[in-house]
Length: 125
Image 1 (tube, rainbow, N blue to C red):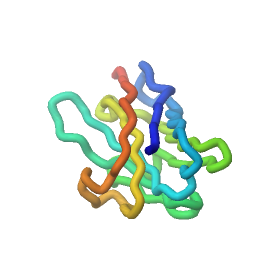
Image 2 (cartoon, rainbow, N blue to C red; image 1 turned 135 degrees about the horizontal axis):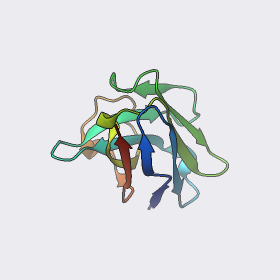
Image 3 (cartoon, rainbow, N blue to C red; image 1 turned 90 degrees about the vertical axis):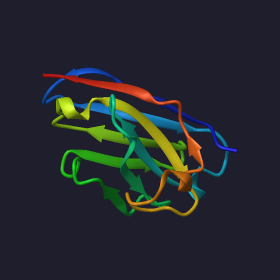
């Protein structure tokens, strides 16, 4: 069992930056592929990014490429999402996720076994 707790969300002006963190419980953090999803108001939840177990390979949705960066610290059992050049359309609840086998941004939600409770990111214009 893995518990994921996100933090770092908030209100920011367009063009600004935020850094989300996701702390995982348990000793098996390094065995999981980690990632972030988001859900904007009135829209379906969508994948944002994933990172492999070692932190070597990363994948991003086209909408965030070049602006967002995912990283992880296995010693701290934490995954991060650095979000730069934020846009109003980035406004959403951001969820931290963990999977045993799904790497990339094309996997269905069912492949992600563990989910955090979500953290709100609001970007004002």
